[in-house]
Image (tube, rainbow, N blue to C red; front, top):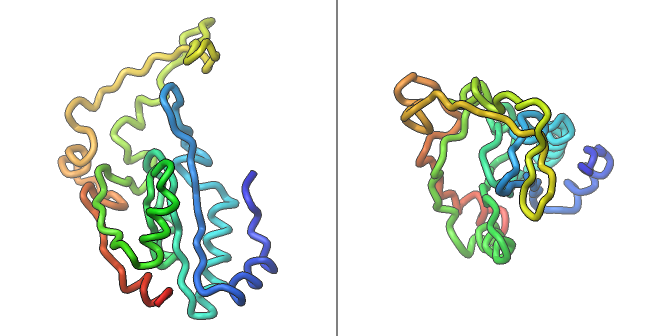
Amino acid sequence: MEMSADKALIEKAATENDVAIITFGRKSGEFLDRNVDNDFNISSTEAELIKNISAAFHAKNKKVIVLLNTGGVIETASWRNEPDAILLAWQAGQEGGNAVADILSGKENPSGKLAVTFPMAYKDVPSANNFPGKNLSGSIEIGFMGIPTGKKSEVVYEEGVYEGYRYYTTFNVKPAYDFGFGLSTPTLLTATYG
């Protein structure tokens, strides 16, 4: 269940705290395909949360950080200019909380580079025209430990070698964040905490 963007709660938080950290998570795993709506694209509740928190904290000259705890890319172009920073944690596992705390406190530098391209919109993904494919009628896919995962489907990927940065570069498709993008901005974080 998503937390609603209650303006009274946000205003109280902006008064009582030095910085806002908004965390978005997405499920991921083998045998589990993602959805476009409310997964690749953020939900309307998430968009409202970013907008309202950013407005309240910025009105008090305070910083807003969005932490992405995701197993894949999500759409960022529609909201990336509202927070002061986006920290991509991927799905960091057992020590992820400690690693994020070290970065947010300024103990470590957030110096990683993207190993994938973040598209402006789902239509810009090279396989968008082919995925999720077509359902094969009357058949149910059985996944790990015999758990039904849905109908069997067939996906024919037609992009060939034009995947990832090769696609974006070859066909002049402007991404939100290029393969290899990454900033080291300890000044933002140390100014907030330091």
